Amino acid sequence: MTEIQIGQAKRARRAYSFDDIAIVPSRRTRDPEEVSIDWQIDAYRFSLPVLAAPMDSVMSPETAIALGRHGGLGVLNLEGLWTRYEDPTDLLEEVAGLQGFDATARMQEIYREPVKPDLITARLREVRAAGVTVAGSLSPQRTQEFAKVVVDAGVDMFVIRGTTVSAEHVSSQAEPLNLKEFIYELDVPVIVGGCATHQAALHLMRTGAAGVLVGFGGGAAHTTRKVLGISVPMASAVADVAAARRDYLDESGGRYVHVIADGSIGKSGDLAKAIACGADAVMVGSPLARATDAPGRGFHWGAEAHHGDLPRGQRVQFDQVGTLEEILFGPSRVADGTMNLIGALKRSMATTGYTDLKEFQRVEVVLG
Image (cartoon, rainbow, N blue to C red; front, side, top):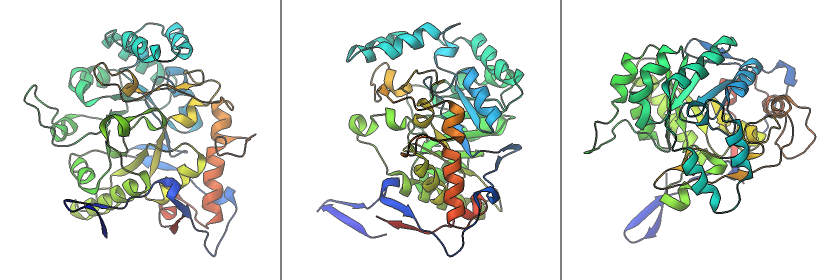
């Protein structure tokens, strides 16, 4: 790829966001009813290629169960309010009502309450009792501390999610998580991320992960680019990681690692573009935060917003446009891509003539 000279000592390559690209129709069209968006990772099959981001504004045990019954995968934040407090309902109400600069300080205070292993167990068992696939997320820093509790509670899918996760973390302060060893010894499939480059993704795939998250998490609620200067436009990031999946498939003799786009998916068109760039599924936060039954009550935030030393996220407010079911399946009452996400994905696939997600990854895209 042609590099651009930033100055005499630095060159850069051009990268593209979902807003920079568009999907091109083909010579064939079909009825949306003939399109399949089924997705399977390891032994678990879903009728929607949608994972809910492990963010307190989006996922509670109740909403994780609801999404599971709709055919997606709700991922609980196992370091969130639901594992720190017996009943965080009043605190969620308080966070929604915070004003201005006081919001970050108060959220840091609320999240200082220790994570309680018995609440991790209780939340995961509540989801399991509902008969849906159970998924929980920990940061790399807390994974070794709580992994046994999570597995013993009966989790089906283990998610390790951070702003950036590498297979080669170096630390002189503490023994870092050995991802390859950890995943090898675990009896459940692991999804790990985020990452945004071919090389980083390839190294994560070599650890034995079942899926790799592309992006830095937080999406609309993170300020990582402003605080750390780190960001990679998602269309290029997903395409690069999809190339790593292909290379690893050859290298490993046929082991397929799923690519899950995690970030910059705010509208239904972004979901379709993520698949078109090579994603197998998407992890979304802000679209589900718009639900009238979302725990955030119209507000959205991630773990970055209450980091104790260096917050790099913010609490953002969205218009609540409909129920979770309406946001997923419609009917839509708006024309901005915030409702009927699944109907829009099916129609995009049908308009371009594709019948399933793997085929749709081959669709032509253009810039502009």
